[in-house]
Image (cartoon, rainbow, N blue to C red; front, side, top):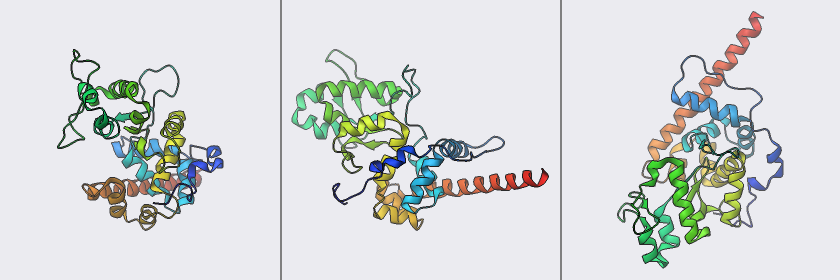
Length: 269
């Protein structure tokens, strides 16, 4: 990976902040669409303008950009949790085992009083409690309210390392990756991602790396298996590659149907 000082990050291209988030033309999906088609419609109709511009920069098919965002996110970067200030709180996931790595190992007694995780499968068994008398809570089952309670409590122990330990926004990029996507501090990444979904999407494609990275090259040649191995790891690379291919093909089919419909309407008119 190139050093941050040598790489031009997408987030530093100020003109991208002026690029329209939505596309010039929305995508319509007739009938009762599947979950995939609904997600494709939501992603394109809300973010298609930006995705088209990013695709031009990275020299990839816009269908590929749409597919990546669909597979790696729910198409939403903020929770609809009743917060009065729009757009709500950024979607996060607090990872106990990451907080252990950055803070807990140096404060084992304090950490183990409040946090649990499965040592053999550290991504499982996440619980927390605020005091010795409190009950352990499996907070990943509590939606964003649970994630934020765990994160805010961890922040009272160590703010920077608690931010290292959350995945942020639509692309769910971990805070400890802040330098990889061009932020000199995790706080600046957190504030930027909390501001809007545009910054989150730009962060995703900075993570993929616009500077001719192996991931970008794989996407250019539609080698989704190599991309998935690099982005998601080797364990389920074939599964992720198949999902990307499926979303890519469905987006192309839907756009072609929209083109055919427009042509038909012009002829009838």
